[in-house]
Length: 164
Image 1: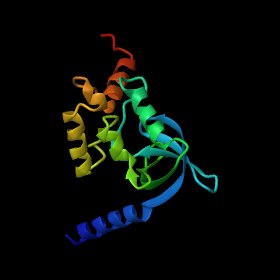
Image 2: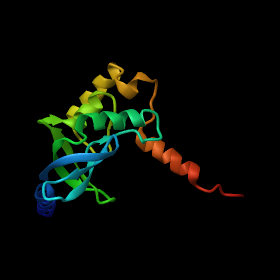
Image 3: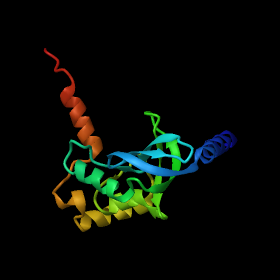
Image 4: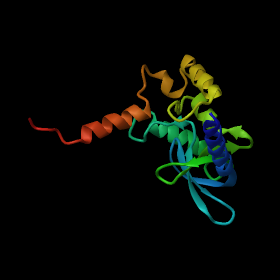
């Protein structure tokens, strides 16, 4: 039991040690959940919005999602609370513009899903339910395909077929 407590403490301490706030100008909005941040010292970070997953560009509502994020933050000074780095070396975090949580705003307006696989944000869950009920954005169509399923299906279609 003592070992589990120590391990839990070390993991929590590592997460706290990594969490940091950075600010800069948002640009190069790639899609609804990825952009570049240029800090005042010239450092450029690739940012992936935490806890959400936006449609891929070649997916239904992908362009609308990107354009919504672009209209909100492009060329504006934002603050990012970085939580971690992902396998693509992107900084993953929550983005704020004038103290407004942009990640949650994307979900509220139906431009992204709450990414339950990587998030335990109970408020995002409620925000997504409201967006669905109100048929906001991508929820205006019946049964939109989540981006993780879209990517999985795309990978499966690209695999060479086995000949028996």
